[in-house]
Image (cartoon, rainbow, N blue to C red):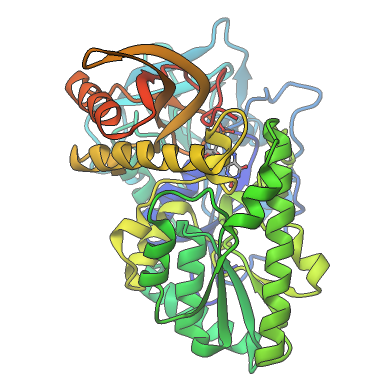
Amino acid sequence: MQQGHQSILILDFGSQYTQLIARRIREQGVYCEIRPCNESPPSAVPAGTIGLVLSGGPASVYDDDAPPFDDGWLALDLPVLGICYGMQMLARADGGQVARAEAREYGRADVDVLDDDGLFAGVSPRTEVWMSHGDHVEEPPPGWRVLASSRNCPVAAMASADGRRVALQFHPEVTHTPEGVTLVRNFLTGMCGARGDWTMGSFVDEQVARVREMVGEGHVLCAMSGGVDSAVTAALLHRAIGPQLHCVFVDNGVLRKGERKQVAEEFSELDLRVVDARDRFLDALAGVEDPERKRKVIGRVFIEVFEEEAAELKDRVGEISWLAQGTLYPDVIESVSFRGPSATIKSHHNVGGLPERMRMSLIEPLRELFKDEVRLLGLELGLHADRVYRQPFPGPGLAVRILGEVTRARVALLQEVDAVVDEEIRSAGLYRDIWQSFAVLLPVQSVGVMGDARTYEQAAVLRAVHSTDGMTARIVRLPWPLLERISTRIINEVRGVNRVCYDISSKPPATIEWE
Ligand code: XMP
């Protein structure tokens, strides 16, 4: 909970859009938190809490195993917004009728606004919305009034007699509901009295004070990967405790071209130790072809190297009590959701096992933020926009993009290919619109012809995907001239590659990385 800020609580009934609700609320400068729907209500309204949102969810209020909900939440008498399933629960709780629909309504719909006071103030009389529901409210509870309706859904929005509870059958949080932002804003400012006191500037000041208080005279160790999260974590901690922060960047030999140099230059103000452990990693990877074994080898060597560095640092500065980690809010929500963490498809490499082994306490200054807030925070802290908007890069690096054995020669080859892709995507102005764009090296050779000579060289694959969280992805329809330019440049400039393919698989069923 953010002390001193107004706050909205969102109860999560399992909707795929719950995090989007939180995003829309925070974009209005209002702090909010997501809680699992089975959490017990507090006995009194927590300090600063100004409203409650009940999310959508996949269940039907009639299901025997419908998610549990304690009416005590409603007894708090906060302004409430119910969305989809949340609306149906509000209807049931107050004596309305919810009906099972014969067919699910999914997709775009037009609703007519019947009451443009309050929640719908400023919304067009007929507005486009996004529906995704099976059940719907057939009869609003006694005294409630219908605010909007669509052809398939006569009660598309409703409000209680006193106007303290409102409910929407459609999803205001998705971009397919263009005026959804207005609805969210009306709820926040009109019904909850939100002042919009949540800004990145205030976040920095508060976190700096909090970190200083937590750490005192102690020392903090931070593993920098070059990614956005660890970079922003380090920058924030540096602002708070300056020389008591010690960063370690490990060159594991499977980084992108130029990455080590860039990090060393960009963070030269920090106490940053750049460890050249290329040989250790690449020796350990020799002969390893299995993707999961590659990850395990890299994870193990990373921990060894990091522990050695920590020991050396201890000799230099004394006891180190804290380990900084760039954990973000979506990771925190995943672990508190009543659905539990989702299944592991690939074992991701991070510094997760370290704190227990090293007997350090964790410091996670980003654990209340979403990714785009972290980027804003990075800019606020003066980080370079290229760092802040860097595409995600997996911990095991190019090792999971080199199919088959990872050798020094193959790493060098892929670095060159990848550098061409990176440069071309950036100069086409597409880098920030794309979730990830990169190259993969295949373990096959194919025949080509260059000049008058036959070649028999490696094949590389270009991959570019759009995604919001890496869980699903669709391919980017790169313009043909750009694809041709990338292919021509790679084949002409990188000796050893004579064929370039474009990966056109979505996730699922393919994953983003090839291994
Ligand atoms: P996949 O390949 O599972 O990737 O579709 C989803 C997202 O996760 C990244 N990724 C990793 N990140 N360690 C990481 O830190 C890993 O082992 C790893 N494997 C995949 C991938 O780049 C994509 O953004």
